[in-house]
Length: 356
Image (cartoon, rainbow, N blue to C red; front, side, top):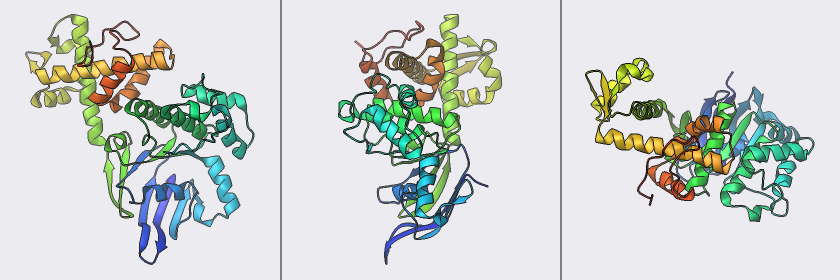
């Protein structure tokens, strides 16, 4: 049985005004699904119905085998409190409560408020030093991280995120999406509404809505292939750093044996040269690999300085964050970090156009 099953879901507001029309889909436990489409396509309406904030005109929705459309209001509210975590674009924080009190409020509606647990949830999102600040004393990115902590506090099975980066700058967008990536890796089911194709790429699968109808379902396999090529470019760059040469013998690169076909495709696309058992970069590949190494080591520096993350965990967390970064984001984060020359491990960071 699918974790979420949607059958012929319709939401009608008038004789000819439909927010959703006969939408059917299934979502498996642990999936990360992006719901995409232009404004007014029905994305938020679908999310609100799944989150028990609205009810359909027709059709059925079940989560974990429980039919939501059959539940009375009291049971629906209890299901929402116990099973669903919300991350809203507009934050919806109570302005006169402190950050930790806002998270405790979500606990109160679930069971018992526990300040220690609320504080730990906030530390997890990098806000351990902001516990007693009011929302007005936080940046937009910090407020959104409070929303993530609030969504997690009751350990929900399902996380619903409605345009979670819509009000954020590029640096905070990258931080929030890194947190969602962590949640997905931990096994949470995430349904995320977004109109941003770059944010949608982070999901495993994309559902596209237009005028209330589900028009297509997109797998992200092509994105994974692109990510593999980037990973291999970084492997060649690091091996060059080790051997002190522009050409790397293929037998000295463990990744070559397992991914030989991908290396051949990369050579055909003009990213690398592959001759006489040695691998080198073309100008295109050098630029791309420099960018990848630079953003990875900047990501390590960001986690180290912003979240005081232990050095042993920097690499794995940077791997989750860096796919979000466009060249423009990389430049802004480099400036935010004052153009560091090395990562926290002492390895050099390639210089960028913004660097003095």
